[in-house]
Amino acid sequence: MHPRGRAALLVPPRRHHRPARRRGRGPRGGGEVTGQGADARRDELAARLAAVRRRIADACADAGRDPAELTLVVVTKFFPASDVLLLHELGVRAIGENKDQEAAPKIAEVRAALPEGADLELHFVGRLQSNKARHVAQYADVVHSVDRAKLLGGLAAGAAERGRPVSVLIQVSLDGDTSRGGALPADVPDLADLVAERDGLVLKGVMAVAPLDADPDESFTLLREVASGIRTRHPGADWVSAGMSGDLEAAIRHGATHLRVGTAILGSRPSLL
Image (cartoon, rainbow, N blue to C red; front, top):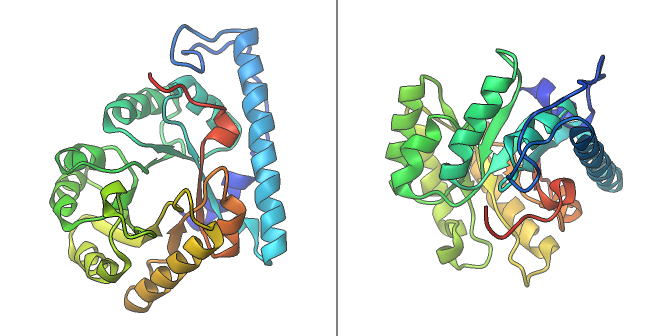
């Protein structure tokens, strides 16, 4: 993300006109949204997005931080391309997806609908299967969930085929249970070195999800310590992806640079597509 992009994610651009009609699937993946239905969905997203931006601004004020230091990644899994396009109208420049089979066609549809050169980053934030790594790197700009060396070959190959590097975050397990994704804190430095050495991959920092039953302040304190250790070896790896709808304030207190927010902006997700 270019430095200019971070502030843009929290402050919506001025809109010069409002389309009278937008076609696309509805918020639950079926049918089309046109006319008043599209306007109602846009108004809903605008209100939810504004509320999240207020939370971010308030949390930054409490922590003595500048909101422009943070990037808001809106997680759009299970929601249609039409919602992504509406979010882009509202100033969102980074979206997050969890599953390759959903993300690939969705981002292709979105990029085809946007003007050439439009600013939109796709952040892959879900657990990554080794057999999907190559394909994900062909369309994702950032991968947040690298937790083992086995993924690096596929990611590098996909980046080479796309002809541009992929930004990588090391996912950190904060409770020691790597079965849910994430490398143990003790293993993160060596994995970060491997990423930094690999052509086509750019080490950006770390990512973590606070365990459900844990105090998010304690969890993000640990993540901050791991991130600091990485920066001593790789000064440019200064991203900390932490905080979701329920704990973004704690993440901001502990140095998060990227927030992954879905439900608070898009509403409750269906259990199935």
